[in-house]
Image (cartoon, rainbow, N blue to C red; front, top):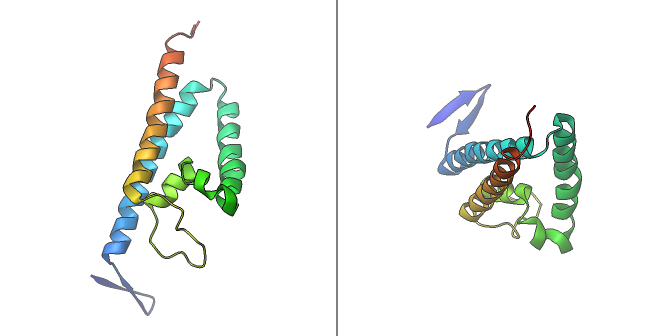
Length: 128
């Protein structure tokens, strides 16, 4: 299927469809992950700051430093990059990433881990 946009052609290929499905899967898994983190950390501002520091500082450094990339493939951002990887590195070496299915399983494991931790701690908290 081809669409005409401002004088150019956009062709919807299997690669674009795979990336779109990967993005939707990553959004769903990050939503579950976010629910778990939000329920685990009682302070809303603290939860948001912790997640922002983790994503923007820790994961960015781990995935940017070549010596740490074998570890970075197992972080949530590394797993998300594996799920949404188009195969076109655009000058960046993405060979260290997991396969897409493994990235999805890693994100699912993080989501389930944080949901289980939040569930076990939330049930013990006094809400009064």
